[in-house]
Image 1: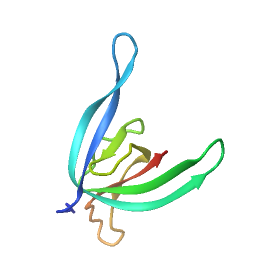
Image 2 (image 1 turned 90 degrees about the horizontal axis):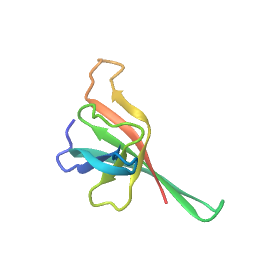
Image 3 (image 1 turned 90 degrees about the vertical axis):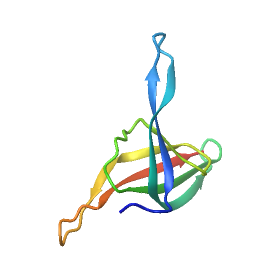
Length: 107
């Protein structure tokens, strides 16, 4: 289930130096990822905020954790995982073509 014209997704993982300062380091760059765009909502609680959702579709099960930051090349913004990577499995045949991950961006 590789998407020939899919997006490239970068996974950035937080690290701490010896002084305890946190920084992000590139953990993985994954090509041919499908992106299914969700909805955007806006709230005015404590100032205007916008939340956009999407689902990433992979041909394998990538190592992405809840604390990782996700960047979709060509799309501005930083995304966070919602939950964990889940396998896609056909209830009829048991075929497992890949996995999905729900993500969100909060402005």
